[in-house]
Image (cartoon, rainbow, N blue to C red):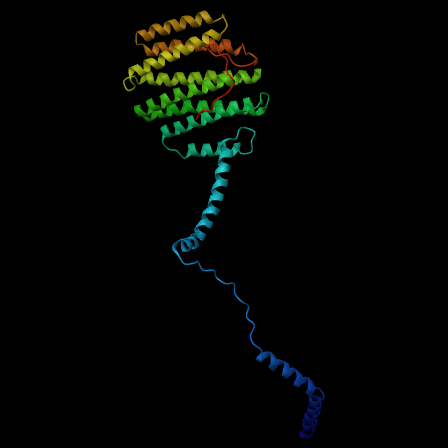
Length: 328
């Protein structure tokens, strides 16, 4: 490119710049607006004031404790919700949404308990819950409901678990622990039998038969517990063992009263032999005869299920109100 051509292009560019130069009046007006904005006072948003406490001890203490009280209220509502949920879970029965969680929690407790004696006490507590569930459903009029059948099955399994735990404690080798657990088993079974005695009158024939089978199982476990005490007579006081054997004899005699006459004589003969063995301090022989009598009566009762007709008659001639007390 020659100098002449270069000068010609530069002249063209200069002309183009002049053609697109902003209007001087617009530039002056814009400049004035910008300078005016720069020179205006700053507008700062006013911050919210911090309300300091008034002078004095109590106002200052109240001010300082506000965050603590807020945290306490939040924690309290959370704890209340948890307690309410736990209470609902513990009060659930077969058929409720929370019942599966309840039984799963119980199984976890047993699984993570290493000591056999402690595990036995847990199972005894859970058996108490099972019999209360049967009673609750019976009182609610769920005689034909499948929930009753499930509740009775759960109770039966719980009682079987008690028998297994009793043997496990005995196998562990501690006579003291075995004696304590055997006594607890015998006491719990007596409570279970008392609740079932009132509950079964509220149920239909099919459910009554199932309850009678569970009662028979409970009696067997109770007899096992007393037999364990008999085998540990040097550890357990002989007076205690003798009184428990006597209780089993008395219980067997009461069962004979409600049995049919078909096997009553045979059962009474077995009880007479049990009493004679007890007088001779033959606790094992007495318990063997009690078991024989109970087996005869259980067979009779299984064939004679009575439909509920009203309040249950008590041994003293009075009538029960049907109220069933919960057991722990």
